[in-house]
Amino acid sequence: MTILLFVMLGIFIFMMFRRNKKTQQQQASLQSQFAPGVEVMTSFGLYGRIVSIDDEDNKVVLELSPGNLATVHRQAVTKIVEPAADEAHAVPDDASSLTAEEHGTSELGTASAVSETPDETLKRLNDEGKKDI
Image 1 (spheres, one colour):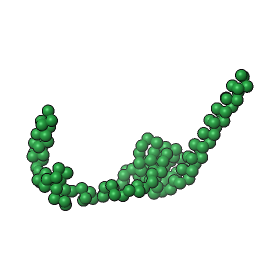
Image 2: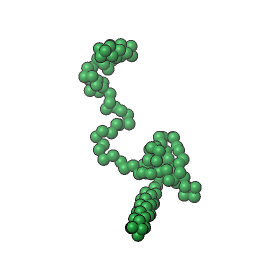
Image 3: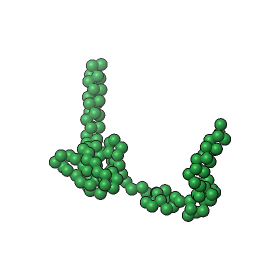
C-alpha cells in the first residue's frame, strides 16, 4: 500500500513538471514571435500593436490606439491576435456604409427617420416606451 502511494505521488510530480515545461515552451515560442507591428492581447484584456521591445528591462510598448501608448511587462502579453479571416463584417474606417441616407432607408425601414430632429426622436422613443407598458 505504501509503495502504491509513493508511485502515485511520483506520477503526480512528474505530471506537474511536464505541464510547467509545456507552458514555458509555449511562452518562449510566443515571445520569439514578438516584433514591432504585431497585434497582441495582454493578460488583462488590452489589445494593441507592439511599437518597441526592451529586452533588458522586459518591457513592451504597445500602441492601444493612434497616439495612445502603454508600457507593459513582457510576460503580460499573452496572445498574438491573428487578423480576422472574415472581412465581410468589418466596419469601414469612415463608416460610410452605415449611413441610412445612402440607401434611402434607416434601420426602421423608413426614410423619414433619417431626417428626424433630436426632439422628434426623443418624442418617438418616449411614445414607443409607453406602448410597452
